[in-house]
Image 1: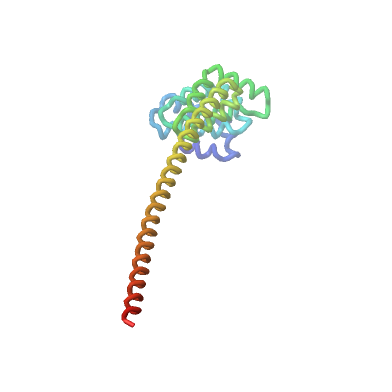
Image 2 (image 1 turned 90 degrees about the vertical axis):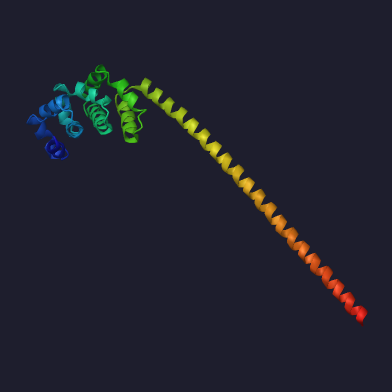
Length: 212
């Protein structure tokens, strides 16, 4: 699977690989393999093949969509990312007929809600890919829900940021007050010292005058 994943990266290899039936061992590996490394390569290879417009119909016709949808709930973030990316690729095509058909197949497999769940994942690249896939699948109701959740999250983050800013300002003001208080004490000491020096000088002057 690692070899196929690497070969499928090159544009000139994508169609020949599909014509030679590369999708079959990849799907077999996805359905039977438990090794995360092999699964990453297998799902990643399908995603790479799906980027070519001539492969999109064949991949869907080979029942790859149910396998990819299943991998959306895999514990490994990279596997979920590749599966979500592959579905996003399949949902796009220069041919509106192909794009609409693939979207229908993906939706019918229950992908929309699973992809929506990924929008709340801790992995940032996965969240971004999930959001992109939802838009490509024309799922406005879920996308709006996701945007609402993001706005709520942003609101609370902003609230926390304002609290931190206010706290920093309070700390700065407190430090400023302490600095001014300290400076005032130093000034008082200095003024007192100068006053004492002045008094001492006056006394000495008077003593000199008396001596004369």
